[in-house]
Length: 342
Image (cartoon, rainbow, N blue to C red; front, side, top):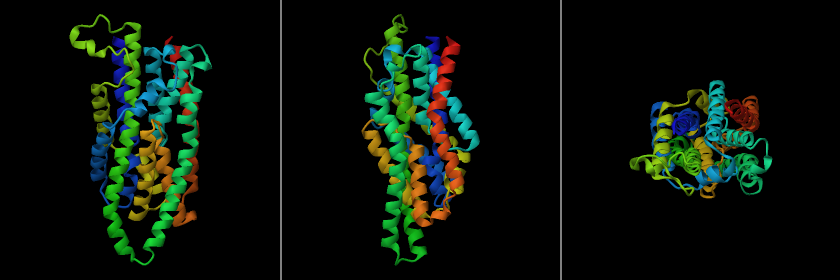
């Protein structure tokens, strides 16, 4: 029971870090275009992350039972997966790199589960989970984000070419409030559910192993014989992500909103709308998408249409390396931690 409490605390810590690590996903552009002050933008992102987190559990189910064989998962496995993701998130946050919290958690879970199964790779659900819902979207979603962002920006240029910059900035300054709110909401529908899935996995594992069988009646709600995401788990994760978002992530906001490309409200609107659509579709399909990948490449696509040389490709290169290293790095950390605890 003590180990389960530690797992829940680690899950809350991960969700909180995820909130301030990925706060930039929703608000970097709205801050850089000066439509909102940083404080206003963070308050808005926290609220709409909360509303999104309360919508559905498809992504939670993928994380909890679609990535690894649950027969080879115990409390230590879940704890090591969370610790691996937390360590990577803190390192990349400190470096100001918008890496993927989603891939950090998935990598940590795969590595820890492999260690629990003594290196048996068959416990990873490649055909039904990892390949279609993690590996393929890892490469296709950034590409789609770049192309759709560029296409939407090109269409807006065609439509708005006869309007003055003052009118365009005034109109899209207001529209960007809508697109930023939608981006924050869609982020909540995807990212908050990943921690819900991990806690649900811990509950299922604890029930299966008999950890909760002798608990007093008031705590019997912890027994979860079927894989479901309880209401209290949904509310806990939603509130924690909102609190983390409210703490902000200024290092990453500077990277996405200022260092990569200089944006105006119309560009912010195009990038946020593109990312929000992609993330919302992925959430409905139960795909634990990297919201960081999508918003970053949407900004790149918009910036490339504005002026290809205006994109600071040296910053983009650093981001790409962080993307590529996240899964293997967190898998190694999760594996090493699990072996160390054993």
